Length: 296
Image: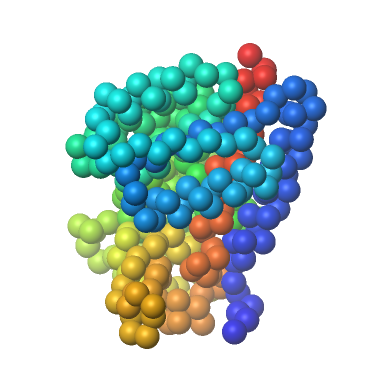
């Protein structure tokens, strides 16, 4: 069924890919082949799928990629040594360590070991700090950066708007809040960050012009929580039981799409909304990292 109020993340991601491909071509003409190194530890099925999608995007845009796959038994020291080698290599302009990592490896240490100049995921403490300070020289995390691009390119006004971010995670919720409260015409929002201990979440949501759902709770946002005409962005990816499917499960977002879609002014589908944007921003960040390398 076609919905007139859908924000087409795939189409917007294609716009960004076209822009990135032109930047990659320019870099190659100037003697630099943008390179992105993926590091995956273990055989988590979702991680294999996500890295595969990113590899294909690289190949399509002319970005050289390599994937280093390490066994689950890899020690933290061994992983850090690999990151050190990638940091030292002029061949790789971006490094992405795919989460989740095995429980015996401390993710924060790993993300902090990646050079901030190659941290195309935007997880290094230096880049997190730059985001908080509104310093545009750092890398913005791909998913919240992609959400902002969805809003900008869909002509959703955030200047002076009430925005509710559902979820306080380090990957989406916190950086999303930082992005949208920046002093910028493409931000300037009044942002309320709601989480599992927030009282009266529905009341906060019903005031919002924009709701960004990233709680990790299947179909949490219901129609009665949404102000008519509000923009709703669904970041969630949740696997739930489902009869009649091959493995007895299905993927759903954090938004009850069937209920919310008739109420919302604009809404992202899931899949096909935020997901393609995350990869598009990763490719764009990689091109930028190569440009920064060339400018040294």
